[in-house]
Image 1: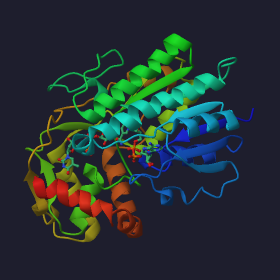
Image 2 (image 1 turned 90 degrees about the vertical axis):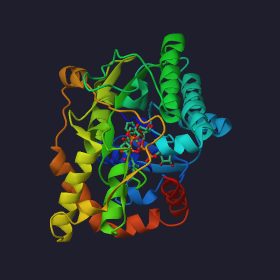
Image 3 (image 1 turned 90 degrees about the horizontal axis):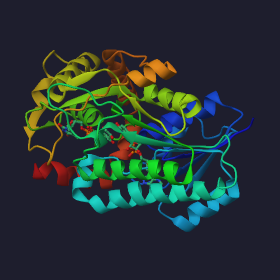
Image 4 (image 1 turned 60 degrees about the horizontal axis):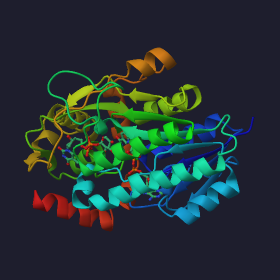
Length: 351
Ligand code: NAD
Ligand code: TDX
């Protein structure tokens, strides 16, 4: 059966990988990518698929209720995969209201629009909400987040994502909207905006600039290759149970400082530098406010019930990522000009 799918935030980091996977894998689906093209949205991320006959780009804002309602009425989508969001924790500390607007209100507007068009018949329909492990708060040295872990968000970003998750579940219980959710750990890979740790460090090492490590670098994150996240989203969208949540993770925990040392080693090799050269750029800076100590995901449910597992070892994924950034200087030049420079200077001059 031909399906009409709406993917929101498809011009961003993870969204562009999801759009590419769906456009290539499902030629019978009609894929609409809705994106406001904020600083984080970049159509260059999709230049290899934007001429595909099953792909349509729509520029628009999920917080514009009139526009969203009309889009849903006109297109009568069969499914929604919702990724559009403000996604950077440091920016949420600078401007929390922008996060509440897009992540909470924007999600509620989409839920409402889907509810209206599927009111009489929701057979075969699906609203998939893509979320983060940060909603669970922070862990000590031990333990893992499971789907049963109580929510305890601690940054404006994670509080806005937690709130949006609650609205998605409320629409399931109250209106029987056929929803499915996932909460994923830190992604890395190509098209990642260089405000986030890994692409920022690659960019700075290449340009011989300081690599800022917050606090003592002891915070721990679980890293997953972005194409593995896109595959998990495909699996959950098609095979996940309605109303359920699936945790997605890489079984791959790293202390920030250890990760940066590994990255410096890879960069030395790739740039033909003496071992130890890039590590000299590591600079400890003022810690992030409310910095969560450790995230670690237990992705056993997704593995056991739906058969998904990460495909790459971290070292291999990191090397692929570095290769991509070194081969795509033009992409980096475009995204690091203009407003990026302004953001970078205010963030790091203050630290
Ligand atoms: P991103 O910032 O790279 O991309 C977000 C995209 O959403 C951009 O293309 C942007 O233009 C678009 N967008 C923002 N506001 C919009 C609005 N009001 N209307 C329409 N489009 C809008 O983010 P990402 O890292 O790709 O994250 C995508 C999703 O995955 C988010 O929901 C995020 O919370 C979640 N997530 C991210 C990670 C991660 O490690 N990056 C991990 C787990 C979950
Ligand atoms: O310059 C830096 N130096 C540094 O030490 C930056 C940008 C970050 N850090 C630290 C903070 C974190 O402990 O590195 C770790 C990773 O930071 P980010 O790349 O900003 O990611 P994080 O805050 O963990 O959130 C990411 O993963 C979960 C995404 O941005 C979220 O959208 C996702 O939900």
